[in-house]
Length: 153
Image (cartoon, rainbow, N blue to C red; front, side, top):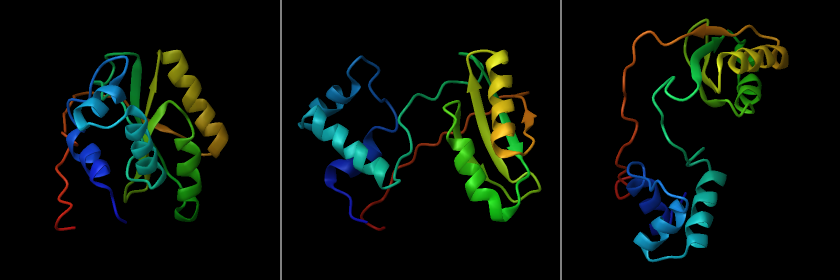
């Protein structure tokens, strides 16, 4: 999978300090001496090729709205299908598999507790599996940004 120089810069240089403005992609374009359309197209290609799944802020839990860590016990042969259904909810920002009886984990974010409860109920209805909630007790910050070494890949 060959990446362009621009795509490599977008992946490495904008994990942190992403411009907070009405026109962030135009600001990135100006820093890279390209047009905003070129930046948007490069991000679209990265998304289409599954190098990225979203561009957005990481906001500490429960600072804006409410959230919960959630998990489901899903048979291995259904895991991919159920994970895709869970990912279709706008309120779910990511999900992942763990080696455990509760093997599908995800975070649900909503405006308020009522909406959060509604989304979880919809997930249960859509998937036919119960959702276990694990509300935040103590916050830990893990920096998920990292420098990618494209030369030695």
